[in-house]
Amino acid sequence: MPVPMTITEKILAAHAGVSSVRPGELITARVDIALGNDITAPIAIAKFKEAGAGCVFDRDKVILVPDHFTPTKDIMSAMQVKAVRDFAREQNLTHWFEGGDSGVEHALLPEKGLVVPGDLVIGADSHTCTYGGLGAFATGSGSTDLAAAMITGEVWLKVPQSIKFIYKGALQPWVEAKDLILYTIGDIGVDGALYQAMEFCGPAIEGLSLEGRLTMANMAVEAGAKSGIVAPDEITRKYIQDRARRPYTFYASDQDAEYARIIEYDVSGLEPQVAFPHLPENTRPISQAGTVPIHQVVIGSCTNGRIEDLQSAARVLLGRKADKSVRLIVIPATPAVYRQAMEQGLFAIFLDAGAVISPPTCGPCLGGHMGILAKGERAAATTNRNFVGRMGHVESEVYLVNPAVAAASAVLGRLASPDEL
Image 1 (cartoon, one colour):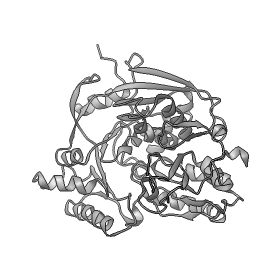
Image 2 (image 1 turned 180 degrees about the vertical axis):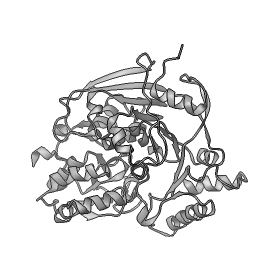
Image 3 (image 1 turned 120 degrees about the horizontal axis):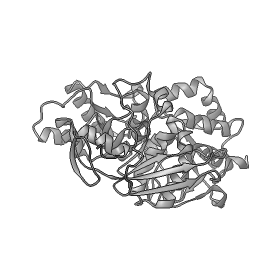
Image 4 (image 1 turned 45 degrees about the horizontal axis):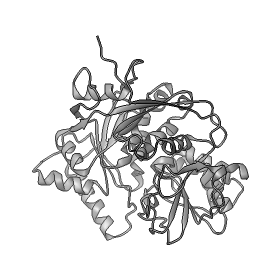
């Protein structure tokens, strides 16, 4: 009789070449994608060469995306990107993205159909868990693990336990996927899902766009999770069917699968959330934010830089201007999103509001460039982390919000709800 399994366990079993796996079991599994960026790939490349490897296991499955310090900001970042570029050319990698082809990696790969449902993806970047929104098992790894995967096409894993999160109810206006995941992290804490798979389901999740599901999965790591995942459905199929570069498999959890916990939320009364410094768990509803002056607003990142995020911000900014005390920065996550925003007239709205429009980059999210905070400054950002010094000076502050709240905060010069406008 088949062993009941969660969607995560099914994907891992398939990639380990076994009929079933159980939480805690150690497995060696084949990878569909091994991903690196301009910060992590140079280390992996050095380890690859130290190991005496001649070529990658599959030039179609090793993907390199310089996105953190691009366009390169200084000599050191230029040298890092050059190391990755030289390796990509040496190995004749199929998927190497730079310049006008590049974008924020975790927005770029789903958009291009390079990650598909049922995949096992590792990436030397903690937010690789984003791809769980497609129904893939995706997790961050160290650069040494990436090097090993580039050589062997395999990864060593401990099968995680799963927590099922069931979201019931319809979302209120201005409440988005970002608010669901911020609320969840606020509830369970930044270590509430430590080395576990967060499985998101329920009517509220089923009603999310694919982009919203990617946002949910993106921040699973902020709860300490190994991965986040949403079972694929017709929304997934519509998104992927004309994009997928490879065959894909829709997995689903068995009804009698075992979970470490099952947590249910009624989100029908949920407000937009704000994560206060200096942890993503430090959340409160926008109505309880108080008067917090803001100096910078960043709309973008692998969490909220997709077209629906920019559309949400534009709805709030239409006909309005950012407060004179606020620097408003808008960062489309990929060239395709950039083009869509331009063609849909969103750039005119942003420019009229006084925004700076950046090329696709991770830039300010990690305190890299394109919007560094000075001592004492505060930012409202649609990014995913607000640790001490995350976006600049150690005495600066980052408040995590959804794109609509970010836009309203830019207009009013303080943390604010779109309803106030």
